[in-house]
Image 1 (cartoon, rainbow over the protein chains, first blue to last red):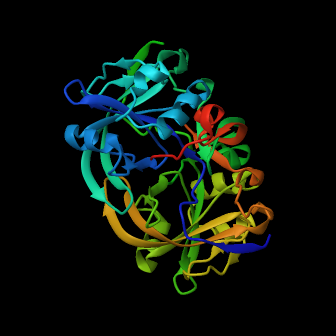
Image 2: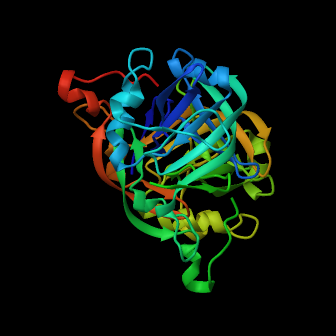
Image 3: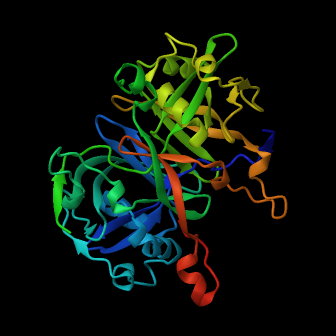
Length: 196
Length: 196
């Protein structure tokens, strides 16, 4: 293939497109759609979201120091897009999208009941970077839909929930599974341990 | 749905599974598979990868202060898995996987010619976090397969390259597109600007 120089930019995809719930009873609650998110460390479990400081949710997260990452699915795709376009200053996204705030385990921010997996986060550091500020955060609790837990093995499988991902402005379903971790060596000598 | 408390951990998926090339002619070159990666800021374009310090690639990145994120595809799935299991201390991953080091635009680290999109990164800060250290980095150049650029619109579309993503230990192809950004409001009043 022939390569062409492209403008240096944010070209890393596929990414998750998550619904982040924020705020609390006192300050009000809101939802913001985020693709600038990821895992930073396995142990302790650390993740981040990056948010533009002019967003309504930014102030709510700074004030409370916490938020919940709610994974999204095919059924939530419309709400995921809509909550990325609208502002919580003007509309009640929960009400308009028919999403239900549910009490979290460890934070005062409600999780989104309709999401199959909720990651409760506490901010460790807020770092201004440019258009976006990064909230470097600790995962303090996780809530999972019981239907995703295999009763036999106890393992959690997200794929039956039909998670979606975001690629250059498009929301996609997951397709065919190509293999599970270690498949490239398993045929020959019985799997391997990921080193990364 | 009924929620069950799950161990706080790294449950944020789908994620990209990228091949990161690192090193240079002097120190030797290597490839490491990474899922702990993401975009931190749109302008300036900042991203990160998190790497365990015991990995061979970690030292190469610390020494050179640069690396290349090579996006992966269905055709690269086997190499993506294999490079996450093996160590560059023991094998030449380039040779074993038939991957071709190609000169990058701005960094001395080679990109992987077989990847349709290469993101050249320079490390701004190395941050120890626990099991993983985060390389907070600036995107200094991007190289894209010409075949992915629509000759009519000039837009870049990654989906024809069959990108893959990683979900709880499984490598998945992309499936059906659900909609493009703004689809939730477009029917009514002609699109919207993402606020996040």
